[in-house]
Length: 226
Image (cartoon, rainbow, N blue to C red):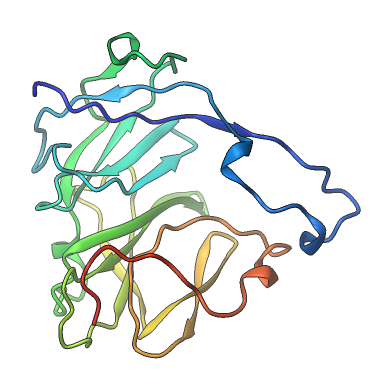
């Protein structure tokens, strides 16, 4: 295939009245509330050290560049940034706009951490873009695909300059045997929970909402877990 069509669907959901209500009183979200608003495609051509063939889908939205960070080929686990073009509301692939050239080419990140990656973390689970004190940063959750001894403790690194992934310093920020309990103000807050260590999709949870996420975290896994 000349192109790998990566479809990014912009979905809108119904907005419930929130004023005067506690989070516990709000209705639960369901898929029926989503409406397809359009999509676009990204070229699968190689750039930098990877391409989008056989990618597993972790993405992060850069609200300042109106762009997406995306992980490339599963064997490379590199990250690139692509501008989001005009969205076309169509279900015919040939009618969707194609992005050919990235803002930032695919660059390896997990092998360039400031600790040298001694635990051989080899997969990106999730990403989250944040402007912290005027500096663009990319939070990256990492894991080892097959942690047979169950001895991995590294969970998260921060790309210090999200606008220069290829040359940026990468700092290990969280080293725990834990899974996330909540994400407060865009940053992971962790709680010890046995010996489980898994990948996460990172999202922002406001201080008002965060009490709802206290307690065990459950998820469906599709990779080996010790």
